[in-house]
Image (tube, rainbow over all chains, first blue to last red; front, side, top):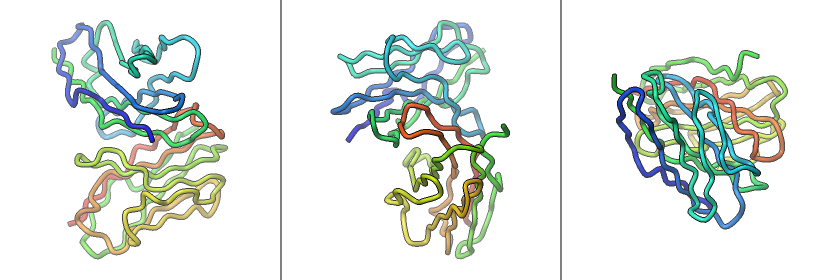
Length: 113
Length: 115
């Protein structure tokens, strides 16, 4: 079985500052990795995904994530955040060949002016 | 495409009443998922369907919960009787394909409050 740990439940940051949201996973098999974003009162929206190939994945809204197999991590980064990035971010892991992801508990990104 | 459509957006009901949540997946998607989101437990998978057939309902908390998918464009999640602890946001999601690499498309959710 796999598990996902999002190390920070809340990350406050000032506008235009860089941010990193951390995600670690455990799995005995190869995995697919995802980040989703949930804006207030909305459903989850796929931000980016890693299936194979380059370990640096670029997503929407200027976000990117890097897959580190040795550290079993998939941290999300953005070099300069905007107020509009304030949202809940979820990391998810799907074992290759399976279809059901395991979601982390989420990290609330709060961008202050 | 209009995306995954859920109704109602908000539902307030009294304990003991029946509640029915509705979902229309994206046309052509062959997987449909029902999730529940609460502060205490985060996102929980309740049940999922493939080609309208329930595949895994092990996440359904109790017999009070039931889900159906009578055709490819419609699914319901029913709670009968409802209890205050069922208060949560319920999401429907759909996806296409046989592997987990495509990600899901989520609806906007139904916020259920049972008083």
